[in-house]
Length: 95
Image 1: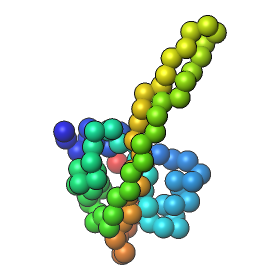
Image 2: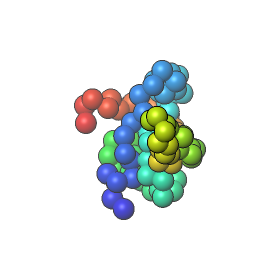
Image 3: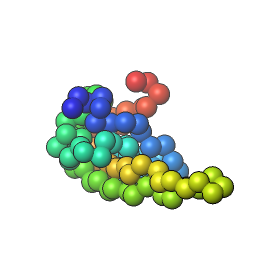
């Protein structure tokens, strides 16, 4: 699994931006099979920063209906990556 496969996309929500500014924590949607070591290595390689710790959360897909047809969204995983003190916060648009 390459670094680009581990990190799917940054999560840019009001909560994630608040954590980014206040706690130096980045938020990403990651591959469900990725572990914390792979996530840490991917962030350090892609953004050229040092990572202090990684927290992950898995989410089950929600039931969605279109009339009489029902199905589930895919399960997904979120990672909160805290950077070490003194590290410059990367901007997602600059990648």
